[in-house]
Image (tube, rainbow, N blue to C red):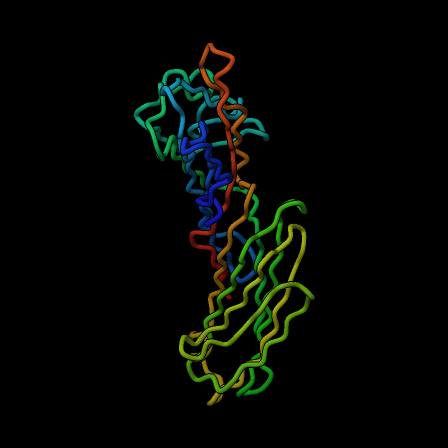
Length: 277
């Protein structure tokens, strides 16, 4: 996945580059009704660090000033980021976080989870799924699936995959796609499903797949029950839904010559992203 790919591979004369990576990764669980309403939503978030620093310096990582932990804590403003709960790596001085929303710590070498957090409740779904099913004749069903990216235009979903299970009594499927973008769709007969993949789904855009499904037998309630739900898989680089932000990452080191490379990246992934039909 994108977050695990190194940003840089720079080595000099066999020495490792002095650097630290901060990855804010959020995995989304969402369930939509057949009318498009959100029935369940949760963010499972993690601030992951990969430290390749010499000398084990102390670090300070600052988050949003208006970050709220627990939905009953203090005044909550419309712009506040509200976490249901969170926990920290043992290297973090928790008392500092309570007062300043800053994580002060001495990182262990290598990769570790600095902070885990969970968010439930209202947040903007990055993708909206709208499915339609119409029975054209007793043995012909038309399925239309629209997906809209409600993320900034500058962002995009990577390798977005839509999976739609269909009836086992399917005789054949014809598929039509709407846009001149890098995408593909096919009927997987062995798995009784349609897979639709879009390599790069731009923010503020919408795409549609239409499929005509020919059945071996007349449509019935049993056949209809085998259709759906629609599930979506994706990654969104450099974007997070919660708006949790790393304001800065400072090295608590007195020597001006000590200035390691610092990288902060964001990634949103689907965990379970499902729309009923």
